[in-house]
Image (cartoon, rainbow, N blue to C red; front, top):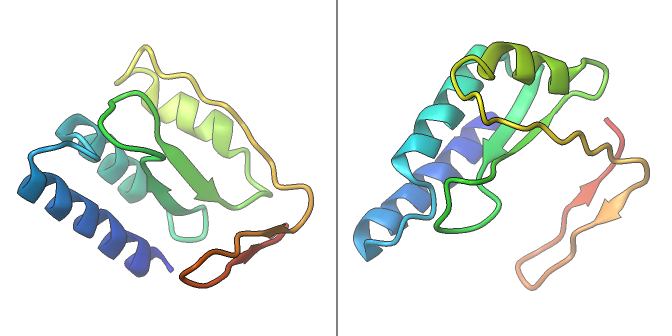
Length: 108
């Protein structure tokens, strides 16, 4: 899964470069790369940007049974003092069906 997610981010950076519009700004790329390398594949499955153009938000998808919020805060707030971490927990299955396929997200 992580390899596929890295391919998605590479494609997003390529689109950014070709269009001249930052979807994943370089400073965000640095943070996401550091975050992905800091945690094992068992802890963090994917990190990316939820939208285009800003250096204001990222998302991280990872294992529920670790305190990912505190781990991120402890490891990254010294590098980014304005970093705020919001913890969202999936409590019931989510069906993300769309025109290109579907994904069911469940409590993992």
